[in-house]
Length: 304
Image (cartoon, rainbow, N blue to C red):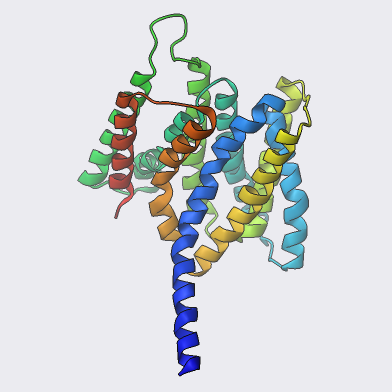
C-alpha cells in the first residue's frame, strides 16, 4: 500500500509539473520584451544583442559537447539552419530591440510580433500550398482589426505619428514580424531534421554575425556596464536563451509542444501587464479592446 501511495503521489506531481511547464515557458518568454526595456538604456540594440549571443554561445557550446548532442551532418542543412537563424533570431530580435530602442512600448511590440501566427497562416498558402479555412480567414481579419484598434488608440495629431515613438519604430517591429514569420516557414520546410540544441548554436552563430555586423556599421558599440545591465543580460542569457530552450526540449520530448503553441497568444497580455507594473505603460480602453480582438483572431487562425 505505501508503495502504491508513493507511486500515485509521484504520478500526481509529474502531472502537475507537466501542466505547469508550458505556462512557465510562456511566462519566461514574455520577459524578453521586458529585458529589452531594461537593458537598452545602457547599450545600443545591435551591440546589446551581439553581447547576448556571444555570452549564450560561451555557455551553450560546452553544454552541447557535454551532453553529446549530435551536430547536423549535411552542409546543406547547416546552411538552411543558418538562414533560419538570420530570420528567426537576427531579424526578429534585431527588429524588436531596435523598435523598443526607438520608443515603442514593450507591450505594443509584443502584440505586434504576436501576430506571427496570423502572418504565417497567410504566407503558408502561397509558400507551402496550405489552404486556409473560413475560420482562419475570419481570424486573420479580426487580428488586423484588433491591431488597427490598438495602433489607432495610440494615434496623436501632431509632429509624431504615434505617441512616444515614430514610424521608424513601427517599421522596425514590422520587419521583426515578417522575419519571424518567414523564418518559421523556412525552418518548417527545410530544417525539420535539425537537432534542437546544436541547431540553436548554429542559429545563434548566424544571428550573432548579422547583428555584430550591424553594430560595427551603424552603432558606437559603447556599453555602460551597470548592475542593471549585467543582471538583465544574465537573465536574457541564462533564463531565455538557455533555460527556455532546455524547457522547450523537455516539452517536445514529452509531446507537449502543441500546448506551448496554444499558449503563445498569452504572451502579449502578459507582457503588457508586466510593462504596466514595471514601467507604467498604459493602453486606453480602445487599445485594450483591440488587444482582446487580436488575441481572439490569433486563436481562431491557429486552432485546428
